[in-house]
Length: 513
Image 1 (tube, rainbow, N blue to C red):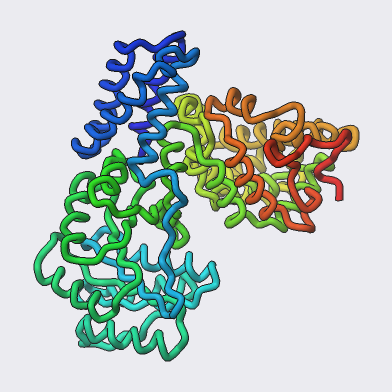
Image 2: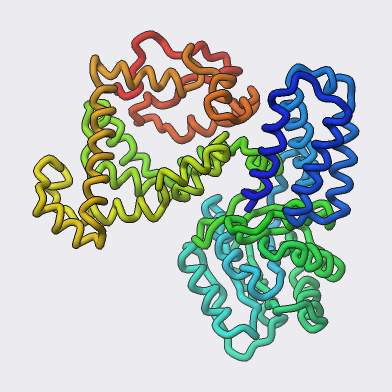
């Protein structure tokens, strides 16, 4: 969603990188370009004016003008301004879950904004936090809306309120409240009806339901692709309903991102969640600092670790690690790795979380490494027999033709896949020599605690911003959660800088049990 803005801002910062000092004229020029970039991203004009005024004030101080690296200072000022615009430096605002259950969460929004799907995603998120959740559809107008929510509830593994034909929305709300109390639910999510446009009947019904249910949270679901229309919708709803937060859907789309940057500033309401895919688990908690980092091309390593913890099959990953330590890497393992990557968001999703990758977008695009390419690779491997996947050297011309026909690709693509696999297998075989010293060296490099790598070197390699000690501590804590006591990493990862770690001991082998 923020790709265009990221590209534009990266260009501004790159032009500053070679300058030794930053003059007031430079500041004016940079602020003008940032203003244009924000307006092109469809950020509301009052928000842009406020942002530029604050940034200019911070950028004209003596400390900045005399700075050795002015580009870094401008990046920091822009980052701080984006964080402030998106919600501030504090911890993300979570849901207000009542101490006296059931907590009622009311979902509001226009038809087509993804409100019903978001209700299902939120139910899954809460159920993973060990909450007993009940979903109830109050949408009596849209055809099959109630059935859709019931299907989403089944996917999320939660209960939905039984459908009673002909019942009015306020009566359904009362029945849902009674069922939630009697059956001991922790959370009740009410999905209200929407319209294609705002009208009095919809607002009156939503206001009546809010009065009946007295929700702890009233979340407005808005489509991020609608730009400034989403901001106007939020203001209209906020005037009639006690809104407590915003949810932006389709944040993985190709919109310009202006709605996300404007809604918090215009309404004063916190953005609590982002819908990042059509999948039932495609709902991320909103964090102003991490979103600002993504906009500036600094990635989001914490989100990457969270995805690994949530989506990776750790038992399979541990078995793979042990095989790699012995130099084994067959086509079944390659297919598993591609499948794991797809579950974590695919190539595009993962690249967006890595620092500095934005600058390499063209090279990545030219390489042809896309999710469709990986799908074809999996199809090719699936067309092979078990013996062929274990011993690809037996694949002669006739077998390759059969595999290509089965996968619906050319023989040349089968050959490309086999070449890639051979290169990867040779690499792992070389790293596994001498008791896995090569793999241990990689661990020292990317464990960030050894002599071969530190946050500054990591930043230089990726073109991103070096993690702070606090960020390293948060990443370390999450990594330790990922590596269980039975993992081949010995129950944890190497200590990181800022945590009292002194790197890895000599001869350390992370794949030795």
